[in-house]
Image (cartoon, rainbow, N blue to C red):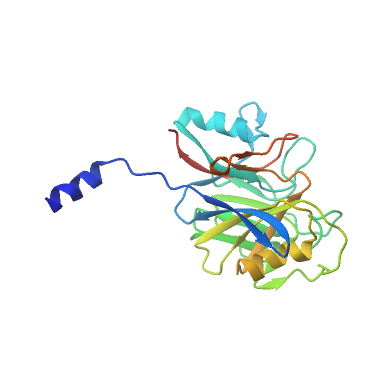
Length: 244
């Protein structure tokens, strides 16, 4: 009987792995986070056949041709007016935009910035400071550059001020030292960079974290009934699961 039950379990369709999303609190601020484990199918989405996809709905519709759908998603980096990425963008192993390491205006140019990279020759997930990435670039299947770095090998970005009054809705991604998971975070309340970085390091215990964007930050988490709308986006990161 046990052998028969084991055989039936093998033959039955297995539930698709999906990002686990939940709401959280830290120092009086509200957050939503989605954890993706190494081995789940996580992709970066930019342009389709008709140009930049720009929305969670467009990505989901594009995936339907594969009989798949979005499990979770968020915006994944800064972009120009035509929605092309500001920094490094690698999709399916092909580089669509180059690495940028010079200082510049805005949050992207607040060095050090970094690269979120996974797949290919990379085991699990990695957030790598941009100059380190340039010196020894790993063969990523997907990569998105953004900035500033929030947490760098356990240290907060040196330019962040605890009492800064520059507060905004922000989103980003963090990884532990072993790279076994990626934690995507959306701040639901305005906060400064220092508090956002401490959420990753002190509350979640993550070794490295990268800022994606602010003010346009948006999240797609259907298990929480959340589908943020707004102006078209640039790069989007999300899990891919079989269509029900």
